Image (cartoon, rainbow, N blue to C red; front, side):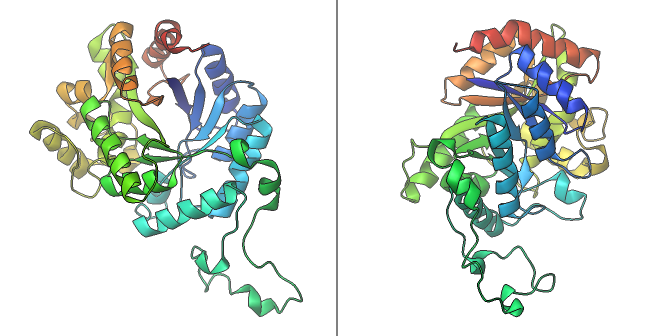
Length: 360
């Protein structure tokens, strides 16, 4: 199983973060894509590619609104070229990136159409102009107004088609929590990356949804991969471990109740915590461990929804997830240079957890 860490797309700090991640034995580095809160993710990935040689690199995650699908395909394919095949495009419907533009996440139909276009561009295929609905006519009129002698018949990125077809194509992974987005991911992604917490019961529910959606769409239910974003705090003191994940856990927990409804296996006490968190969520305190929403999380909820505890306990929980067929985890709460407990947690994971999951 691949174990990834994450970082903000800080223009200079990303160089240190990437080198530290590779030296620490992580399989990959996922970087934040939220234009009002961090630097540009694709530039950060290109910088990281230039100071590493083995570390895989991905957006964690971009969205279907702030950039046109052709622009995202071009950007991540550029990273793929610089990194010599180590890039991954992580994408979702958008959260903080859209909130800071006064918008909610992308609508389902838009997201599925966008995913088809993104996969087409990255596969070297063509996208009909009439399907591109992301550019409003009041912003840019049709090309026909130019009365060109010759013009493109459709949208196509030729250099990607020439250099990154087949096994060199950038894989696309969708972050998903609700049944409808999980189904879209099942139909359009190379990997579904769940934001359902660390509970094997909830993750199994997500896998079952993927298999059902692919079967219904006439796709091979076995021809897709699984991953998960999981909050992880590794520390001999359980209270410290819980506090390490408290801020990040508010984000993933909110995904499961964003529109006022919960889904999947949950106890009544878990549902109660999730609704309280949603009702108290302050986007200006996004990811903060001392936020109003973080205070809602109970010790029992954290223990059930995250991975917290000693290295042995972390290994045990990771093995349980791995046994389900999930072969990639992005561990939130493992960033470098944040504070002393977080550094202690990261170093414990690197020295006592990661070696148990190395395949070579």
